[in-house]
Image (tube, rainbow, N blue to C red):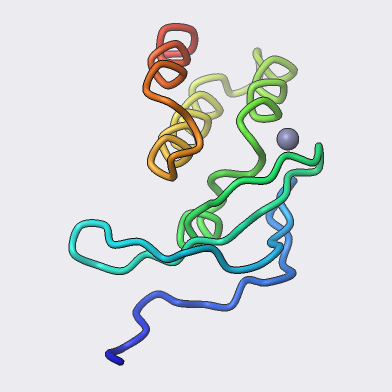
Length: 111
Ligand SMILES: [Zn+2]
């Protein structure tokens, strides 16, 4: 095997609302292997997220929780939060959690 690149053991770690349950299949993206993890949101939703994205704080929760959070904090640092959510959504879309249609709908609402 070659070098392990960005691999880091995130199992059992918590990133805001997300708990890392275990490794998911790694994927090839842009000619590099990307390590994915199965994460569970505090609401119980389970999905896969890229390890490097988790470490950078996006996503911090599943999509519905991210949306709820956005609703609650609508008037606080809106642009920064919106940017964060956009990145979260992009990550979820990239990770295959969200369909093209959902992604498009989301962009229509928030962007
Ligand atoms: Zn959630």
